Image (cartoon, rainbow, N blue to C red):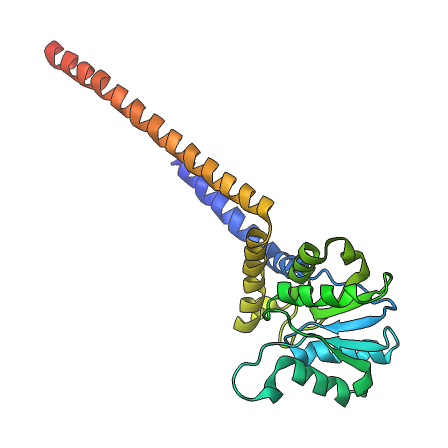
Amino acid sequence: MRRFRKLVLFTLLIVAGIIVIRRPLLIAVGRHLDTGSSPHAVDFVVLLPGHEATRAFVVAGLVKKGYAPTAVLIPSKLYGQDASKAQHVIGRDILQSQGIAGDQIIELPNLHDDSTFSNAESLGTFLEKQHADCRLIVVTNDYHTRRSTWAFRQVLKDRMTQIEFVSAPADYHSAETWWHSPRGTEAYLSEYFKLGYYMLRYNRQNRILFLGTITFVVMSGAVVTLRRRKRKQEQRPANLASATEQGHTA
């Protein structure tokens, strides 16, 4: 009975602690995804495809404030028949609506698809044609910067010293409020899922570590299970002998 009371008390304390620190913990989870930095003067500002309604305005602001003379667009695949709805086309329209002239916008070819890795490859090809000291700002949403930085580092390696990421705010949610809405919850939780997927798919060492850990856990569980079964089998004859002996005594 005392053990049960202690268990209940311990559980209540854990639940109370989670309730108390829930908000700071959730905020920390959201902020962990944001690895953006303050902007510095560079040669180009790059609009990463997606969420142009926020990212494009940040790119336009950086160009207008003199952080770079030119904006760079990475085209996205066309979904459907209406070319005017392509992400890079919408991005260009927003940039021009904010006063960025057409000759201040460069459009790159998209080498493969719309993945962050493909964006990094397109930008890597662009960097190879620029001078050795060329520097870029890449603009993406705040919760997307950690995965983007990781993916770009796998592709560009040493050239990552030429790139800095600047965060754009997201519509409807932020690191301080993401769990308040289904849209924000989906965005942040799926970003963690995608980050884990990227780290396993595109990094051999991580795959080996993950598979090694799974193998160790499975083998450890199997060993523990076999030992328990062996102990039970050893105890059965002893229990049977004890019961028989007690029967004879009676």
